[in-house]
Length: 230
Image 1 (tube, rainbow, N blue to C red):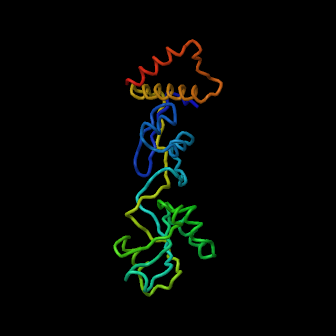
Image 2: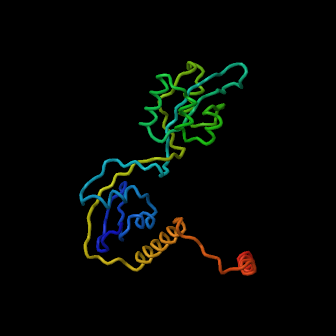
């Protein structure tokens, strides 16, 4: 959908003021390197409105929350080591919800494979051998505590050293300006994006077929040779 050329949005994103100039929502998101989530809101609200928290599953942020359950420790393990179930989650609310399900009896491995953001969880089902120095102090303080009763599920443990996906935007449209011309750089961006979208739509349309009937085998071979030469 095209938006009027003479509109100019200024919005506040997570305490950062950003100006959205142009006619296409996707162009604005691409140009400023931000997600389409806050841009979509900005183009569909009035100045002065503050959004509810807008969840964005694609954004990566610093920090996450661990849920840990100690499975075993004993004579067959090196001193201080522990076998644990662990999952890394993107926010505290999610971690609290998953913990409640675990406490209610749901399987840790099943939930870890569905929700944990740790690599390799599909293969190891969230099971790890934890040794001193491998994790942040808060995690190790819980998991390596020799007095901790086995099978205890931790409260969500905040960890600033990891990165997780999923975060929330707060967006406020500060002002709009009418009758403002789009500068040359923005126009070039819009034209380039429109052309790229048109090319993509041509390739994606099954009704479009490349007609190479006028090319014999010799011409095709010559074309391939030229392309492979670089």
